Length: 359
Image 1 (cartoon, one colour):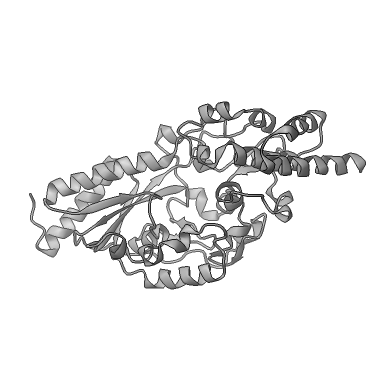
Image 2: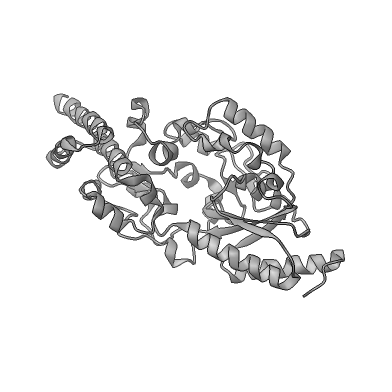
């Protein structure tokens, strides 16, 4: 076991920890304290504005989200890591978005679900650290608990929170996953970085539903990622035409961000596109029955929204597509679905094509 009683010894440990993180496939590591008072105030205001929509879990856990030592007693430091996911080999995003016969899926969801991979690697990193220092308590997280991951990433120097609310890094853009290790080990802190968004409003201007209601503030109820992933019920009609062919998530604010010209391609094969999801034909996806949906998307984050929401999202995209006999036929075929949710969106989509035919 190594001693970490002096600042020099702790600094050497942090340097080694950074190297181990790279060995486990992470591209960056930072360490922050647990003071999230500023983030707690911002979260309170966001919740008071009801911008969380139906995501009741954002309020349910109270201060466990903003006070790490309440969630995990004894926590004094949070180790945050970053893992790039940009699938450089995928179809060009704007080309897919410009083809209304195809469905656009957020680039983070084209391959396998990142949660399991990240947690496994984080656990290995934590165990390596524990083997070096001896007695140490820890918990690893990756979207698996009430954790203010963006605020922690910002405090630890991973990047700054952009006007679209995603974490940005000057050398790597924003296409990366975050994971955390809560620990009672008093590691040295890494320095936060400054905001480099400047006067740019590209993300605000391009948002299809104008969900970025002010710099650094997103109304989730308007966000296409929320509407296609988090929302369980009907998508409000006012937003359906704005969704275009986005059937799972929305990357517009990241695609237009100037900092993403520095995005690094992922080295993880698990994050590369599977089953042609980088440029799929909407009619092909709409034809999947539930068994096919579950089989094709095994291990994918998309699977968690369920077949019903999948058809709901695709029905909206088909309603926004150019009218064709094939699309109308496919939509009519779904009118006998037992799901009220699916039938509602199919009926809406058919009405769009009826209007197009009349014109």
